[in-house]
Image (tube, rainbow, N blue to C red; front, side, top):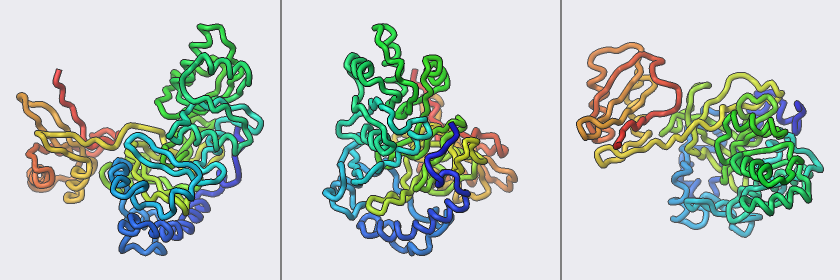
Amino acid sequence: MTDTFDALETRAPSDRERDLFIRLPEILRRASAAPAYAERLRGFDPASITSREALAALPVLRKSELSTLQKSALPFGGFVSNAPGSFGRLFTSPGPIFEAEPAESDPWRAARGLFAAGFRQGDVVLNTFSYHLTPGGFIMDSGARALGCAVIPAGPGNTEQQFELIEAYRPRAYCGTPDFLKILLDGAAAAGRDISSIKRALVSGAAFPKSLQEEFTTKGIDAYQAYATADLGFIAYETSAREGLVVNEEIIVEIVRPGTGDPVAEGEVGEIVVTTLDPRHPFIRLALGDLTAAMPGLSPCGRTNMRIKGWMGRADQSTKVKGMFVRPEQVAEIGRRHPELGRLRLRVERDNEADAMTLLAECAQVSGDLAGAVAATLLAVTKLKGTVSIVAPGTLPNDGKVIADERSYS
């Protein structure tokens, strides 16, 4: 299964990059019509944002802040200039965070990911993502129907009725969490129900370990995973190559150091930041709080876009030390004040029934009392005392973690 959705997926990476950044200035200009973006982008000329380097200078918008920002100016926090009535559907996700669906075919850009998973025109799709208030069900539904599939809007739960639907309509494909697909398979085996028509699956919303993928394969189901969010829709998806996830078309993905908006080198683990090119509801540098790393080279499946390793944990590692919050942004600030340092990790432990901090800092060439100087900066930035340990480059693991809370209260 090496065919692709369209020619955009196999164009030269330089052509894709040129197209994205030719279009970006107009998206920024339109975004600035919304008051919140107008304030955030004040002082930047949209016409000058024509490269990744220029984009990286813009402030990030953290998803963790959206709920609070939206409450200050319901429903979208001043980040959307269009009235709610101009959209097709309106949703809410836990937080609460309010989301709008553009009134068009495949508004969440899901069709590509479904196509890569083997969904084809004429397939019947069992969609078990929720259709109630949140966009999950509609993200998959709109993508499948854009491909020409018929969709069973089953939603989650109620396995007995699901078995009836499957036996009646004989769906070839499944959308939902991997956990619920396993529940269906185990339940059908125990109850003697026939759900063998399902041969393809696109799963998301939960971890999908290789062991579970292999279990599905033994039961005749070729399952693929997608990385999607309720705000942005499909961000990246697995292909037949089974080597990471290919970034979707029409979006710009950056990997940045947690707590900052600074891009990291290819292969370095960092936080996912996404910019969309939807003129009605753009997101400019939305930091999702999830960790991943960019993979080198191109996918053997023939698609030429950037690849990511998939979900690798959470970037929001804030913790309390002696009653005060310590945040990744503060660790990043220490690094900015000492540019000779490389990777940093703040280790929090219990010592004699008290909280204790140690900042591990990579450095190739140590001069003077570097540890003492960094310790003074640690105190100035966090208002908490801690020790500093200078270590050789490459000592700290490449896992995106800048705060490691190792306290145990057992």
